[in-house]
Amino acid sequence: MDAFTSVDAVSGASGPAPASAPATGAEAGPPATGRARLVAYARLAKFEFVLDYYLSMLVLWTALAGSVRFASDTLTTLLLFLVGEVGVVSAVMALDDVNGIRDGSDRANYLGTGGTPLRPLERKPLLTGALTVAQATRFGYLSLIWGALFWTASAVLAPERPGWALAITGLVLFAGFQYSWGLKLSYRGLGEVLIMGCPLVIVIAPYGFVAGELPATVLVEGVLFGLWQILVSCYSNTKDISGDAAVGRTTVAVRTSARGNLLFIGLLSAADLLLVLGASAAGWTPWWFFAALLPQMALRSRQFLSFGRTGDALLARRRGVLAFRTGVAGVVVANLIHFAS
Image 1 (cartoon, rainbow, N blue to C red):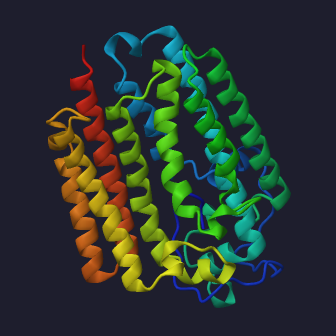
Image 2 (cartoon, one colour):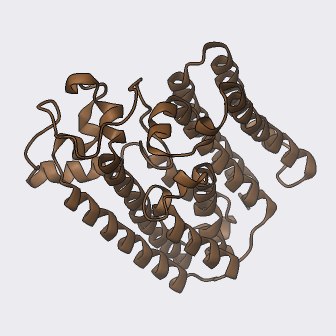
């Protein structure tokens, strides 16, 4: 299982093997060296899967007034925040994998009986042996320190430092990596809160550091950014029910019935559509904002309705990724038009 984005879903394994179970020939290998080790660290950080998180910077940057976007202090603040964001997200992903190898959930999700690979094992360098648990743990902590340093530098050099932006940045720095590490918040029923809340914060906090305020339009876009992330992950959680339940990760999908989980996903999908339409109607965004997101709304509707008919969580997850990226494109276009002056 991967933190926040839940990149990989369980493929029908009945439950995790004990954490101490020995590696099989299908997964074992010598630790990587040289360039191969760098690739292994990139895979540990799930870099190819979490690029969507970094689109937060594009959303907030295009929401700035045209005269502010290219100011030197704006670019410095946002660049430092983005570099720190890479560290924070990498820490979350790495420590989640360490936890997954220790409790056996990754082994169950990637290896069938007899050690037969269920999915490409290179996604999990701890399973293949390309990295050791000690290396991954060290990488996770160093990434967290990296993130804290750059976020601190971003705040110190920012043209504005509103208290709310400092507070929520500190909250994500403290709570984000504890998704499945430390306090293990996703094991305490707070996983969905983190999955939605952290993407929301990485839109609105750096905007606050540059602009010193939080207009309704940016808040709406931040909430949508978080909603669109959870509407990817909740489908992964649906596929992950048996593995999550076996290790005590209490997602909504684990805690409720299949009907209850469908209702939860339906409510989130409805909230997405209603927020887009309601924001336009209420004047929180330009009246025509909804038009820029019509493709996203169509994809969202198809995602949920198809899942309700077929129950194919992995297909719904892929459609959620497409809806997310389409929505971000719509928001960016709307921002460029609205904030052109």
